[in-house]
Image 1 (spheres, rainbow, N blue to C red):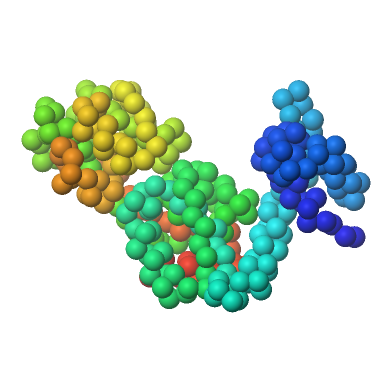
Image 2 (cartoon, rainbow, N blue to C red; image 1 turned 120 degrees about the horizontal axis):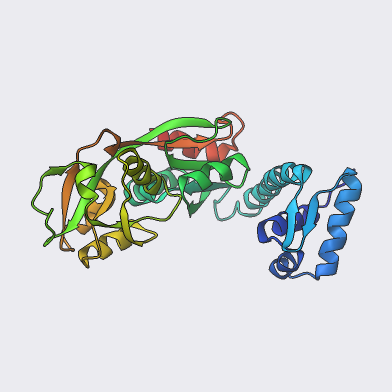
Length: 293
């Protein structure tokens, strides 16, 4: 049985894009040719891989399994190409790293730099995402390594300690809370908040803590990064809860103040997650070992 890598690539594109037409445009191939490739795949496997709907296509259970396997195969093929073709430039490994903004803002820049100084032959492809999406990407073989804020996530992955961070409250300098040294979460809920995206670990934690108090946080505006959050707080649009290390670079340049958040959940654990450490490609295993130090 010979399975063409191009057919696998087209199948992955269809699932990711949601329609055959969008996948065809992404891969610069005629939609009829894409459809023919998928029909041939279904003939090879003697099972339906995609279910057509009035909104596009969705994978069947067999299709979901093929999606995960195909991503792994395509990544391995790409790794072969990189390691063989790029010997001249010294790049002989490729790691797909998916990380949340807490780790990127606080720890990863210096750690990736030191890793690449030691292993200049390894290329790291870094993507930012929310923790829930990261664990799914790792489980589905769309990423080799993930860095998340630990929570109630899937149990079919391996997790390793990474760093801890401390949540604080930031306010504009003229805010009624700005002179306080510490504050409970309950006492912040009378004020407008600048928040992070729905689904992020910190957003979910704030909602859970508020729910336990039978309260609802007053989210006036939501942003996608800690730097944007700090700028919105300085502009007077609300207060925010952020990791201390992520906000620290902005204390000198912005008119904001920090307050200790006096809650047990203000101390958070960040974790590294992988499908299987033993089964990781050599370059990815090197990165995990470096980050665990």
